[in-house]
Image (cartoon, rainbow, N blue to C red; front, side, top):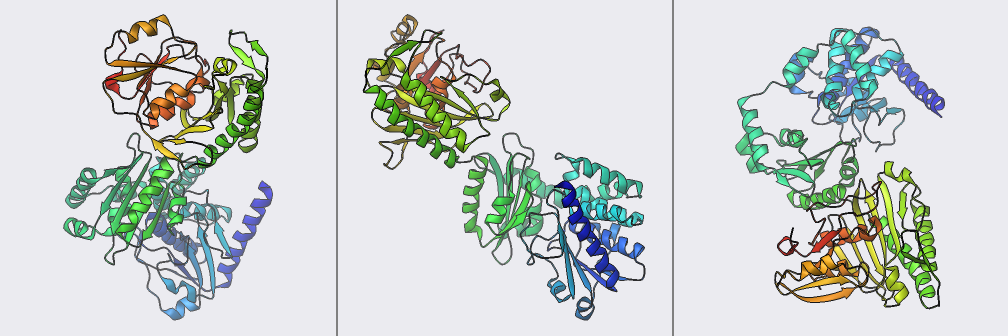
Length: 580
């Protein structure tokens, strides 16, 4: 496949060289608001063609990257007649509409070279989304055809490589460094580029100060909004305000950042940036924009549309995992049928090596849930109570953690208070938690950063739940089978606790999340990851607290699955009554 791809690319590159040879006039176009890559690729290609095809007339059209014009030169001005007689090479534009000089459409032949996510269907073209910049594509084209360079062509192309490559700060590829080395060897003036790029003014300093004092915080992202009046008072253009979005970069716990600036016509320029593990290009495309995985933008119709973008940003940073949630609930409901079928028989009880009971229901439900989810998500790992622990899960970012029948003693006692626990762990944090109560058909679930919910049955509407706000006359839940003398001793110390109830399995945590009770202590070491994985998230997303006695939280998909320290569940921190 690789050799076939390269043959196709070589054929396209040969087509471009053939077009250049067959056209006396070549016009080179870029996108609106030209940046370093657009301008650098235009000037760089123009110089390369002048050197290697000296008999041709070569023109670079547009406004250029203003601050770099003293270094790399002015753009050209030509008539419609010249363009109509030319081969137009359009650089660094992902759409026809974004081409700055729309006269490109007059050309007798058009060739696109770009590195953005492909949104146009035009042939011939070279669109390589894996390249950091259009200048990098041009450098590799020039190397393929052994073009001669001068200092200006190398410097212009280095400008694009530096600017679109984020100054080589964001996971630069081997090819970026290789191409940069090649350009330096061809006398690219690196010092001159950086001198201009990092030159600042008093106005710039004031502008940066405004950025740092007026940004806002979303759930996992930072953003700033500039209105026309604000831009006027700052004496800054909407374009400059937006493209300086990276002033918000590299803030801990905020992997995505955005800037919005209102244009004179009321439209809004929006710029999005993110760290490597995220992708903002889909967001830009959704709002009719485009760009790269980690750097994209779009134009909104008005300031009122920003709220929609902020909602999408929140979804991007804190994904809803809707498909996983649906699959987890469906898997649990399938298992529920089998669990209840066995529940209504005279089933046998076995005792496992850890002295805990197991029934046919545990084994059958474990197999059903795992099989269903493995078919949907074959690349996810699994940690389940009734299956052999495959330690390969420790290197997988995603892991389903499953207890098919939580509260087997309650199942054996036939008191109805057993549950099915299913959780999805990502990077040692639970991101989706589901608890199904087979006997009643009730469902509790939570999605990280999106709340906790209750379903009376599978067909009912989700009800968002929240812990109670009580700080006195508290209800403490005890396990039916697992409470200890220490737990009894602790609860007798606190007059704020006025009511005690015993419940089985995960129901205690779910009831606290639902605001029906306030406290539960488990101070022994008998539980394992699958006993608490979904309920920790459900309690936390309902506004409650789920911690170890030392105040720290549990991480998941661990090598040692035992919860040695026990845990405390409370509706609020004031009610954590544990005595040391």
